[in-house]
Image (cartoon, rainbow, N blue to C red; front, side):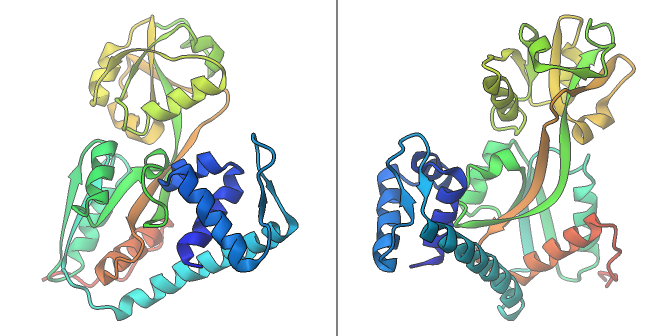
Length: 305
C-alpha cells in the first residue's frame, strides 16, 4: 500500500464513480479498478460496492478507511513540507509559469518583492495560456505554476501539490447598451440565445462557462475567441456578452461596459502548483511568503544586496 493508493481511494470516495475518478487521476478505468481490488485484498476487507453502475457505494469499512487515509495523506503532505528545509536546494533559480493574471492579482509584485529580499536568487515568471503552462509544468520545464482550479484538474494529483492563493468570482460583462445591462443579477437562462465572446479553451474561463451551461441543459453560443481581455471588451455590443473573472477584468473596465453577477455565483480558486516532492527550500520559502502576504501579514525583510 502506497500514498498513491490512498490518494486514489480518496478520489474514488469523493466522486463515487470509478471512471470519473480515473479521469481525474489520469489512469485507465481498469488500472484504477485493479488498484482498488489490490487495496481490498491487502486489507482483506471490502471497501466499495460497485453493483450500482451509476454511483458506487462505500461500505462501513470503506468509511473507516477513508477517514484514516485522509488523515495519513494530510500528515504525509505536512511531513514533506516540514522536511523540505533539511534538503539541499539545488538551484537558486526558479522559473514559474502563470496564466496572464499575475499583474491583476498583484502576485507578480509579491514574487518580485520576495526576489528582492533574497540575495543570490533569481525568479523568472513566464505568462502563457493555461494549457501551455500545465504542459510545461508536467514536462518539468517549470518549477511551479499559477493556474486556476479548473486547470489543476489536468495534472496528476499524486504528483503535484497545490497551495490556494485567492478566490475570484466569474462575472458577466456587457455593453452599457445591452438590454440586460439594467439588471444587477442575471440568470443563465436569460443568456441562452446570447452570442458569447470568450477566452479560448485552456484559459480557465472557457471551461466553467461550458460547465455552467451544460448543467442547465444549454449550449453556449460562442462566436468569438481571443486571448486578450481588451479585445473581448471591444467586441461587446447590445447583442453579445462575455464572461470574465472580476479581479482579472477590473483594470480593463471602461465607461462603455458594465459588470453583472450570475444568479448562481461561480467562484474560482487561483492555485500555486508545484511537484509533490520538489525538495526545493527556495520554493518552500516562496510558498510560505505568498501565503503569509495573502493574509496581510508583513514578513521581515532581508534585503538583496
